[in-house]
Image (tube, rainbow, N blue to C red; front, top):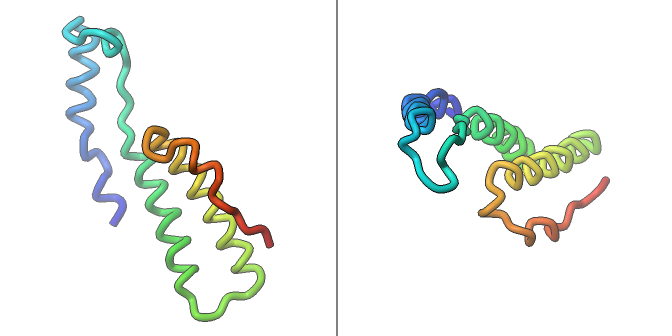
Length: 99
């Protein structure tokens, strides 16, 4: 399902880059190259799916519990990187449980 995002806004990103090249954008957007964020979103959704499915298991081995913690840390890091204005500094204080 995450792949529904693949190339979802490719045309809009291309239009923004062309407008930037043509000097049609102003302020902080002038001359800026825009990058399609959807590949990172797909990656995050895949990690979330793995984390969620593993977490829903009725019994977990210690290896699986450790993997669940690793996926949680990866997810936290990737979300902070992809959405820095939405996670803020409070995300640094989310407890991470080490096994």
